[in-house]
Image (cartoon, rainbow over all chains, first blue to last red):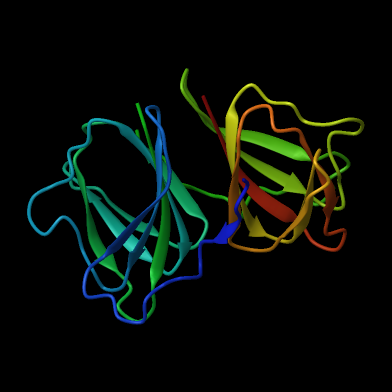
Length: 107
Length: 107
């Protein structure tokens, strides 16, 4: 019934694309693991999301950029809450190791 | 507006009690950081929660016990989803270092 998993396991050796994996999905929330390795996203433009997003870096390093020009460098343990419709993008992730994120999307 | 924090910082040197800190609270979800150091909880009986809880160990080690007798040992990166009203307790946490948890309570 209760099944334990580990966020740092089951990561493919090759990551041609960012890896998105749903951990919990209900009508209220969506919890996902994201694994990046040198990826940036979205490829063009900005994320403009219907829901708020709590995002936490668990491994690696990344830079988020916001439409107002702000750039935020994130290291292990760093987290922030991105309100719905605040446009943002992943401007950089470490090309030398996996960056593992936990994201909680919530209305 | 967007304020970054770090889950491994702002931990008091002395932890006479477990430390609970709300990171995000809305009518839909409650995201909190919990820091334990040799603590178990609740002191007596079981947690019997109205909401589902996604729980992740970020540092340290812990053992959860369930009313059906199952015991789950959790290390860094381990996560599980505890459905509402599944009675459980924290039976053990590492007495030698802080155990840092992320918990997401959701209906």
